[in-house]
Image (cartoon, rainbow, N blue to C red):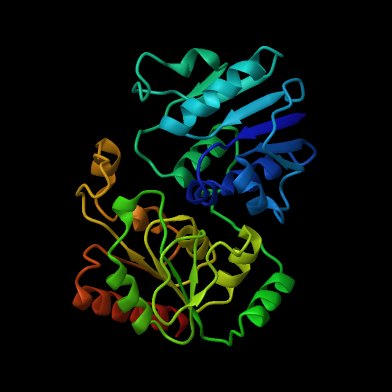
Length: 315
């Protein structure tokens, strides 16, 4: 059987939903499993052992089953692809949409199987719901990321890193998630050891940190984070990578105010300001969110709590 999974969302949601692929391989060990993802996300799956093909191209006649494990905006984008695959006889499975995210466009009719699920959940929960619907009997579909020890050793050698370094991320999908630059400078100053800044080219680099922005492919970024003692940053893909690796994470949250012209909708209201950490509650014990990152005392208190929690878990 040829299974195609459509994942057209961003890096963070890919990490959160990655547990679906292990569940699919457990359920269908002899199937050919393809992930169709945005081109910039393809490297995330370079070392994934559960997939046969990762591509940004769609082979319209190749799939027996097509799975769309997302909700809302990303679901609608995937629906435009799924309807083309349905023309060639594929069985199309997705979640039933309860709201019109795009005006006058309801893709439910494009699917041969619809699964009911609550709205405003995180991607890892939708991955679990999909896995259970398909017959998987595991617990929640735990997110995974993959890297090689060779990449880890090489990136540490390249930047002269020693054990005990920290990583800080300064980018996010929307500027409303970003604290002020002086907040990043302060966080970098109180993190232990060498501090490495990660992100895309052009993002802010805190004073005194080692700049790797725009220089690391996703597998190497993952390997770098795997070697750190702590990760700090706003809600973004690298933060989810760190949590998937069970690294201590200091999330710099946000308040529901307008900073870039975007208005907050029910999505943020349902999860709350600085909401990113809640999606990791079942997995990452070493996670602390600072909902007022402009307050240095709050940063200090969160770091203290994070160290206490980490030390207690290790002891």
